[in-house]
Image (cartoon, rainbow, N blue to C red; front, side):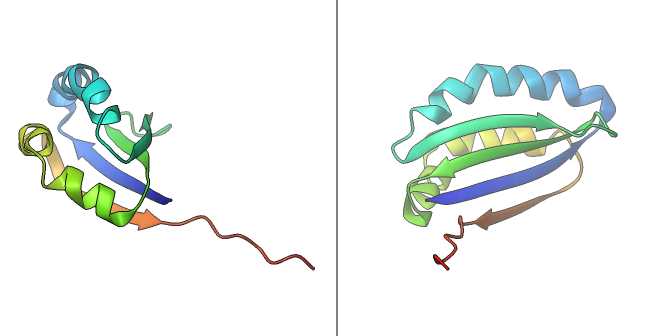
Amino acid sequence: MLIRVVRMTFMIEHTASFLQLFRNTEGRIRQIPGCQHLELWQDADTPHIYCTYSHWDSEAALNAYRKSALFGEVWPATKALFAAPAQAFSVQPVIAPAT
């Protein structure tokens, strides 16, 4: 499993537009093959900063989504609302060895 976090800072006046865009597309994103989970988080101190938190079967599944028509629709519309470039990173759970 691959976990993807994307931190996005929006222009304050465009946060409502982003939230509407997310609500309109989150169900379709969750239906993408390989997407196991998708959440939207809001920064507790800076309310115009949001993060998407998603679980993917693999890096290949995430990359397939990133090459999809849906991503081509959602990402440019989202990016147009940014006040700063997004920060994205992928992580994997660590299974600690038994002691």
